[in-house]
Image: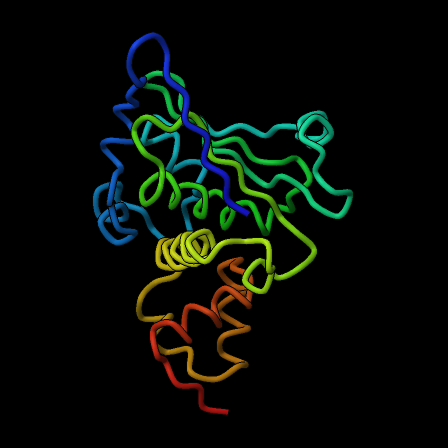
Length: 196
């Protein structure tokens, strides 16, 4: 679930220059700009190179404060404070999930956060977000856009195009630590036909 919160101080909004720099940047453009190599670099290293703080956090107190259901967890938060942009990630994440969650949050910074946004909260639910009747169509669309961005940032295009069978998709998803459901949704969106 995606929640954007906007705050302003005094008479006008606070503008984050880092979000302005990232605004509308596509995954491929970000890769070229930062020289990202798919397997050797972690997204946390990429964020540090971009001067975006990346920190592990215990979100349990916040989850209690905002009354997150017991089967839900906050995975990550993109947070801006003046010109400083940070992505915080949950200590409950496995190392396999970390790059994907960070890439997904970075996607929200590039695609959805306004330079005046204060933070973006990402919740993991036990249910499929895309079939949740309480999530608006626009929120679902933003989540799918962030998923596609993360896939394109983490998986080489040649690998994405070659994954035609369910078995190949599972292999690539495992190799690049991307949830298989996200890779399948990506291929469905891109119109890649499956050969099984």
